[in-house]
Amino acid sequence: MTQIQLSDAQAVILSTACAREDGAVFPVTAKLKGGAVGNVCKSLLRHGLIEEIPATDLNTVWRHDEERGPITLRATPLAYSTLGITDAPDEIPPTEAPVAPVQRRKGTKQETLIEMLRAEGGATIEEIATALHWRSHTVRGALAGALKKRLGLTVTSEKDEQRGRVYRLC
Image 1 (cartoon, rainbow, N blue to C red):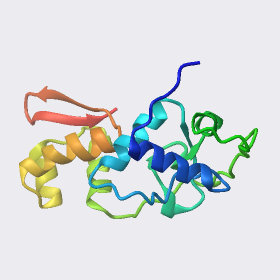
Image 2 (cartoon, rainbow, N blue to C red):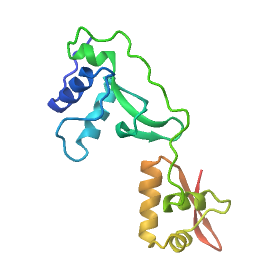
Image 3 (spheres, rainbow, N blue to C red):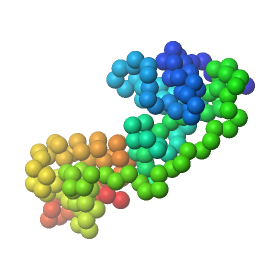
């Protein structure tokens, strides 16, 4: 087996998680700025040193999944062995998943935008801008950023003779 080389930040986050009874990564106690925590956690996920599990405490949420609800991170048995911890649990007990997915706030502009795009005819940039009192560049940013990148939704567009370019959610 090859030895995994950890950066200082990875070692701090991983050793803190392994010191906790449940192996939880969050809350992170390391002093990291900006998106550094996310980058470190993504790297640890790729190496299989931490895993995603359903979050029971909303203060420890890593990300939201539409099907699984809130997700958090915990150390895997590989993390314990990588750090040389011999008294690691043989199997980390599964956590109880919340029964119902987290309810999003109702009546938000994002919810209105999604409803407009899911409607049978879809929506144009101008229609969305008028309905939400946004400028067209804000609508395009919301489509690309909030919907595509953050929520992982698929937005399609097609040219309509009367209305112009129409956007829809698949």
